[in-house]
View 1 (cartoon, rainbow, N blue to C red):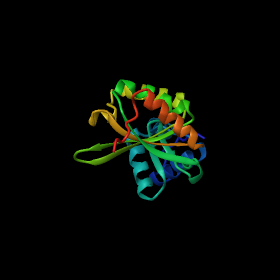
View 2: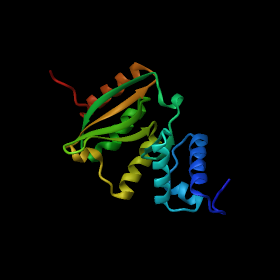
View 3: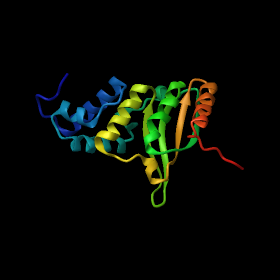
View 4: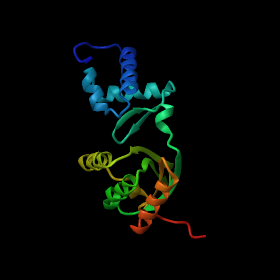
Length: 182
């Protein structure tokens, strides 16, 4: 059902965005929503901000907006890991994680002025990694780790503790995992 043929009122447009995000269950870019509704991407950004302010669990990921239902959010095991590497090694790091069946929920860096800066990634497979890397390259956006000399954390999740352990071991062998020495 394309809405591009008619102009919607703002409240109708926000309801339509909410419906699309709930139904599709996959990220949808702001540009795709804007095209679907015959408005600018900036209008969509405003609409999504208002929906979030109304306590709708919408998150902006590297692949687009997602409606976060409870069932989708939780895998059996989750942990936070600390990594350090160059931006050029990001694709390798993410591929190591997803190749071990790990879902990369976010990346967090500690900024000296703003404190923790968190970006939702929601990366689960090599296709997601490829899309993320292509988006960074096509926009010339810096990786967050460039703000911290390469140090950053990820929240990772998997169906088993073993998958998390094996992924951490692979990152350690690649010289990416930072371990506390204390």
